[in-house]
Image 1: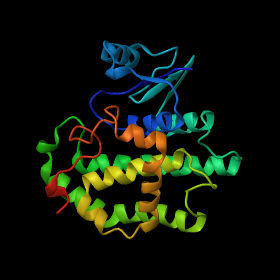
Image 2 (image 1 turned 90 degrees about the vertical axis):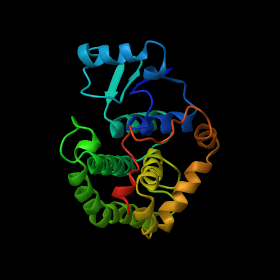
Image 3 (image 1 turned 45 degrees about the horizontal axis):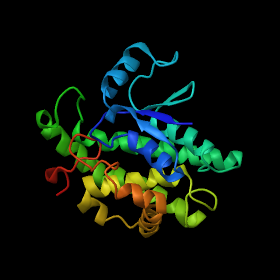
Image 4 (image 1 turned 180 degrees about the vertical axis):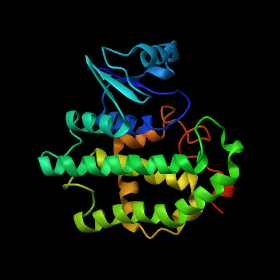
Amino acid sequence: MTYELYYWPGLQGRGEFARLVLEDAGAAYVDVGREPGGMKKLLHALEHGLDGVRPFAPPFLRAGKVVIAQSANIARFLGERLGLAPSSVPGDLAAATIALTIADLVTEVHDTHHPTTVELAYEKQKPAAKKRAEAFREERLPKFTGWLEDILKANGNVLVGRSVTYADLCAFQAVVGLEYAFPNAMKKQKVKRLRALRDRVAARPKLAAYLASPRRIPFNETGIFRHYPELDP
């Protein structure tokens, strides 16, 4: 099967969580928005639906006649089908819990640069962004990263079970995104196990090849993880 991933071109964003699972599994997929005429297809699907399903927003994925939206939901679907999910029901639910919590973290990161509305550019809400980013750095960031660190302390080298799952890939993306957006704040986090997980995931052969390729869109200030020095003093 060739999967079809629908996401905005030019940024990693929430679509990257699906890309990492697809790339690590060596699955065939098309990044529709980056293809010729892809934006037209993406916008048409948002307005009219795709195979009877109308997603609210990208990312969404088509797998044959199945259409799935929401980043954590897509990662779970792919992980279960591509050998990157726990085999037990408790493990599967634990991995889903972690992926959904990381999705919450991603939303909070987004809100540091768009604290009042997504309709206005960051430059139009800088004072509110400065306050929101300070609260995120001081209160929320340690809570999220500490939670992941505690799970690794209890479980070992991976978050669930004994082998890498989509939950670990989601954690990897969160960590490298945070290191881009908040490098100073991340240096203060006492998360040696989480950093070790980041390194192990990055060294996986297929992912290492992807991360070094043009398919991996660089972090930039149009995505979710944005680096504004004034928000990370």
